[in-house]
Image (cartoon, rainbow, N blue to C red; front, side):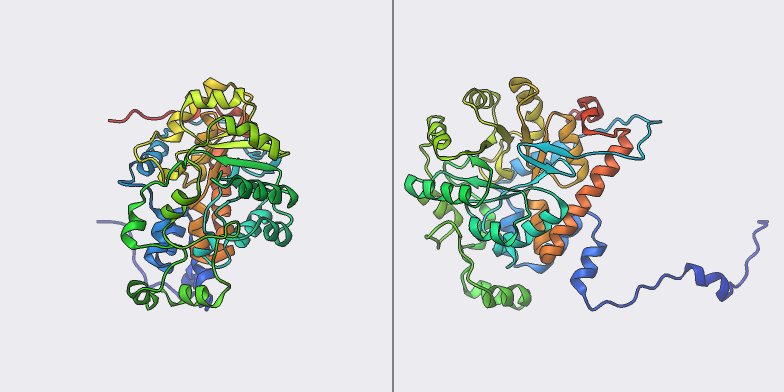
Length: 408
């Protein structure tokens, strides 16, 4: 017979246990507050945006193998913490290529950002400025270099460049970015032609989104998104005077597939600041570019959006770090969904990590507050992971803290 005695609880005993949140009419604010992970923001974004727009962000090229491999590489990390360390205070900040950040994070360039939310690049830059995190504006952005610099002057900003067939237009854009105070130029080199993003093909996504029978039907499911789109200024590329058709049409029409390392000399003549090259996927390319005097490299497979079945950047990182040595600034992107991923990348030799989808999910989920929430989540995860690893500073991290499990 159990000695447990049962009784009817009195209100005085129940009252301390009752936690009733007051009803909120601000549904977006409440949803963002409940979001504890980037995946939570992704699920909110999926509910709040039309399928074609969500898939543009969420999808990748062809069978999306590259995207899956990038994510699997981070999933294979096996943390090995040290214990009995004083981790009351940790410092994950960086000072890199002329910018600082409270965590080893720089926001990656993303194209056509106002399609995800009408506040677009303004919202991202404003949230980044408050968090102290640098932001990279894209050539394919929907806010101009001048407007971003004027409207969010406090954000640390880089400018991402695709070289066009029209070099005079490229030159003019480079000069505008320099005049607007952008100090680092990020040249993306993995887009000789557009990757085949099958979700966009199947959804019939055009730039800007067209009013078709299919999209008109979608208005009933996402009326707020459509009202915001149709009542705000037209969405167009801020740096281009040509639009219409699919993203692939635009890339193949405008981008220069003949770019070689020789063009870096021309670019150096045009740009007075630092040059970082994004899209590195081979150690030999990395060493060649370092020999040519670039200031930093981004190991990237374009988020899996270009060449499918490309190598996962995290798995390539140690090879490239060994090839270029310890002094070359190395960044990495692709598959990053958690602050623990950021810590793992630094442990394997990255100086910082770039994210695109992670903050775009926040943008689609709730505009500027959504981006702010994404940065809060990543920052808290970085701090917590460092403490649980027994590390107080990024310089203490080594590959032994985060080995990759062998695949079965």
